[in-house]
Amino acid sequence: MKKYVCQVCGYVYDPEVGDPDNGIAPGTAFEDLPEDWACPLCGVDKSQFEPEA
Image 1 (cartoon, rainbow, N blue to C red):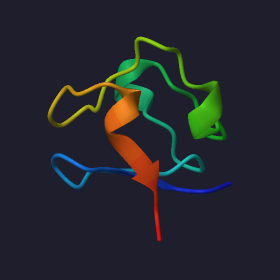
Image 2 (cartoon, rainbow, N blue to C red):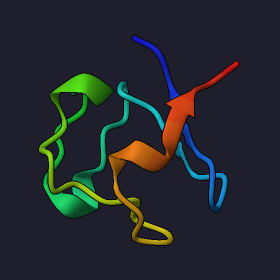
Image 3 (cartoon, helix red, strand yellow):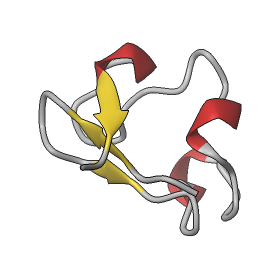
């Protein structure tokens, strides 16, 4: 599964880790995140993320 990077603050969403502090289980692909999920560091929405190069 591909990692995604927040273009605002640089946070990397790693699907192998998930976002357990916000209820996202390890193994959750970026595409499967809820539409209202936001960057845990800066709060922007999913549209501000791009696949890691």
